[in-house]
Image (cartoon, rainbow, N blue to C red; front, side):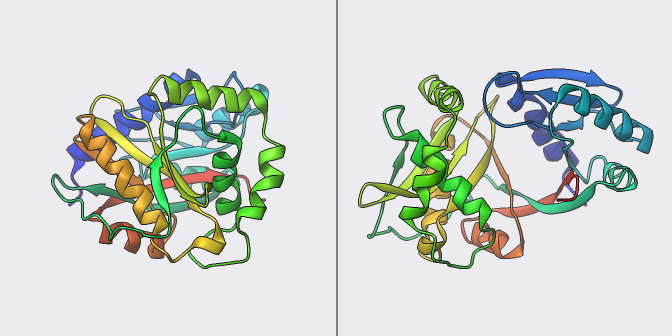
Length: 269
């Protein structure tokens, strides 16, 4: 049986964490998060305590997202609101699920020290365009397989970075809202990730590695330092979602355990 109390605690966090960056608009059983500043589009998710949604509910949210000019995307904890996936699929969205994992108290198993890279906190003075480009390149090449994309691949997305979006990220780092960690090789970022603690809960997000630097333990090292930082800040619940089973196995080696599943829905490419 899933730990419903823990799932609801994480669900409350997932409802709270976007609010520092965007406006929340209630629409039926959903909350639509609207980013009115520079950066990326957010999503809609079921409001905490909601346990049932309908296809009509999803249609209404999608119509509102189109009015707002935001992405027609949804996220939810599948164990708490299982209706969302089928309802979203009936509106034509592509639905996927990922393992939702949580670190039990005292459960972190730090990876071996990495001699070939420096793993450290990212500061406001770092080149945030290149740190951000790591995630762009990494997620454009999903999975854990290696590839040719290395440090040279950072230049194009870094040059195209929106100045206002970069300033927004810098402000969040300065204020301690977002904590970012990166692995640096010869002074260049090659892996990165972040967390945003709220009320004793945090989620490890955006862990990415340049394909040319994969299978060296850098993603695990970044994740471990993020967890250590979270625990030092008094966080008691650390969660994450894994893209696939291979990634989940990496997190399991650090001590994370599968708690349930998170769903995501978006229009087909």
